[in-house]
Amino acid sequence: MEELVSMGFPSDLAAQALTATGGDSIQKATDWILSRQTITSATSQPKLDRFLRPNAETLNPKRPKLSSSSSSSHRPLSERMRPLTLDDVVGQDHLLSPTSLLRSAAESNRIPSVIFWGPPGTGKTSIAKSLINSCKDPSLYRFLSLSAVSSGVKDVRDAVESAKKLNLDGRKRTVLFMDEVHRFNKSQQDSFLPLIEDGTILFIGATTENPSFHLITPLLSRCTLLTLNPLKPNHVHTLLERALHRGFSNILEVGDSVLEFLAHNCDGDARVALTALENSATMATARPGSGVVVSLDDAKEALQCKHLAYDKAGEQHYNLISALHKSMRGGDANAAIYWLARMLEGGEEPLYIARRLIRFASEDIGLADPSALNQAVACYQASHFLGMPECNVALAQCAAYLALAPKSVAVYRAIEAARKVVKESVGQNEGVPLHLRNAPTKLMKELGYGKEYIYPPNDPSSAAAQTYLPSSLLHYKFLEWPEGDSGDLQEQQHNFK
Image (cartoon, rainbow, N blue to C red; front, side, top):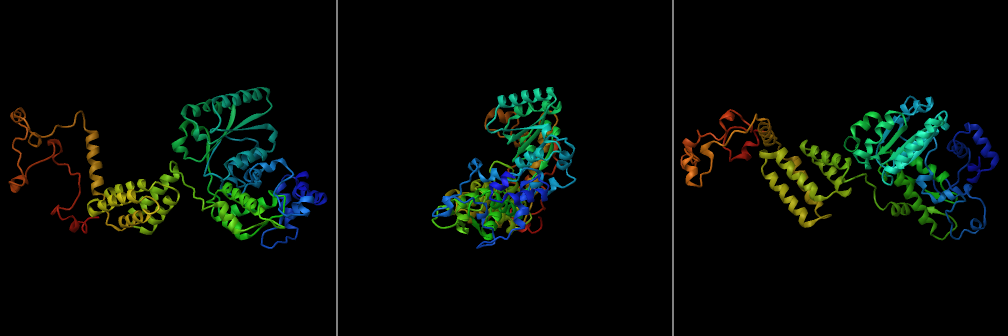
């Protein structure tokens, strides 16, 4: 009840709210009170003067301050707004349904070892902490949080030793939460395996990187992998409203347009949205006046630009280049330009994209339109000369050209088939036929190098019967391409795609 009173609610109203909601969640009690009070505001969002305790500063508000009576106000808003139980978590409904693994684990007091995988700001740490508090008997567990960014072998060893002591005493089981677990190398990850297997610790890992690439297979086999999705705008909006009610102890007016802007421009990252809201309030406080009104311009300044979830060395990098490649292969120039824009706005190196376009021109278009390779190489050179942001149009032009060009994978399949034959040949690959060998010396000529070679320009009819493959491969056909004049590829492209 003290927390509700510290927010500015009368003690009798706080007691009534706790009784009505069962007394197990401050958030439920707060929502119960707010739903029964008349909210007056110049905008559609509540004015938070109800949370303000009268003092000299607020009675003469020349420059309002967002200071709080609690020392916890020095923590970032995103940290102060962490949910206490699973009931307070917003979003990730696929993981928190009544019949889900996490709910069942909390109800039965049997927490499994799990790994949370998802983008930043989607609730990995919050769900891990809330899971313990939601257990029927939280006192059975000790939650120990470490980060692979700042922790080393010694920290893990100390945690394990303390866990063993608690296990021997039969008092508590240790839940070891390892944030950014992908930062640990293979040997460091190996150290968790026997501890999870013999039950010394209950392991909860959190990672933003694809576990298939960054976590060892034995660790994945001992844990249940749970995937978190980016939060939807309505989820972020709910979190921002909650922050207004619980995170500020002063006069604060925030229009719905501000919340909508933040919710739709944080790319599903609640931490980004909450930090922007806190920074917006800080800017609003710096303006002299009788109140704190957060404007849309404040929010735009705090956010600077639309937040894009993109990691040039992570999974998003490969997902987006895959989407660009497949859009061009499917002939969808509109989609290709969109994915290109996503990569450029996320900070991707333009020359990397240009190199991928060159590869695409040969792999997916090839002989169907040989000029596509020229276009892609010219695009690389233009991007090198211009740099960003001017080269974006050259890249878009090339991506559109490649998407609309006729397609053929004949050359790609031919080189792959030839590679397979070379790699799978038994023993040693057959030597070059003598008539195809170079004979720059007298000795080589005496050994038969170049003997009986027919020079096609001098004798085209005889040269047509000349063979160019090793004898064991004379019947292999690597390149499947229509018969005809090999020089007239532009005409043939209409007959082969």
